[in-house]
Amino acid sequence: MHTLYDQAFNITFKHEGGFVFDPDDPGGATNYGVSLRWLSKAGELDLDQDGWPDGDIDHDGDIDIDDIRLLSKEDAKELFFYHWWEQFDLHLMPALTAVKTFDLSINMGPRPAFKCLQRAAKACRYDIADDGIIGPQTRSVIHSLGRSNEQALLAALCSEAAGFYRSLIAGKPVFVKYRNGWLNRAYYRPDPHIHFIGE
Image (cartoon, rainbow, N blue to C red; front, side, top):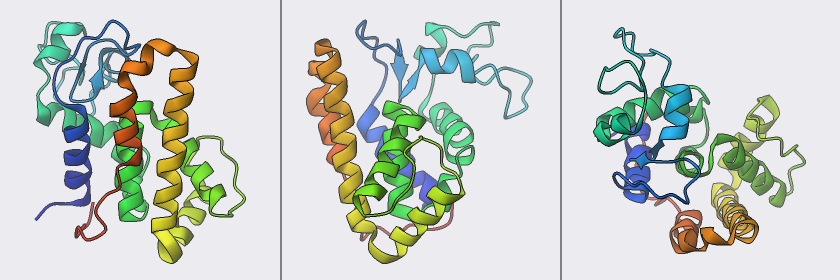
């Protein structure tokens, strides 16, 4: 039996795949959704307390493209759990919303994903700020929508995510090569019949 995080990560894993080094990707080399740009910053922490920075996969004293190449699926899963799932308390959201928001945040970054979520709530006629910060007001609104009509929230979130990706492409046309993948991801909706449990 899988936890909610297990299922969230598995969905993201299907969208991300393995090692890619695309010169047009501002995040640099990426593996399982972990970019070198992000790992160089967040990976300096030692959250698992093993004596090594979390991003120094090869234990050579720095965080570089070699660490991205060596990163395993389990490494990515652990990094995302500590730096995303727990840090932003995503497990406190309604289950399907948590899964969708997590997947978007890995690709576009937490703040843009949270802005999309807030704008989706606005589309559902809730008056909240779209500041990209998941505070008490946003949590209250998301919980209310989760109880009353989570599917409407998810539909609006998909639409907001698609708009975000289209705006990126409009601002930097070289990104057009990502359009199909981005829009498939934007419109993906977790199966409402999946049984999510716990964290």
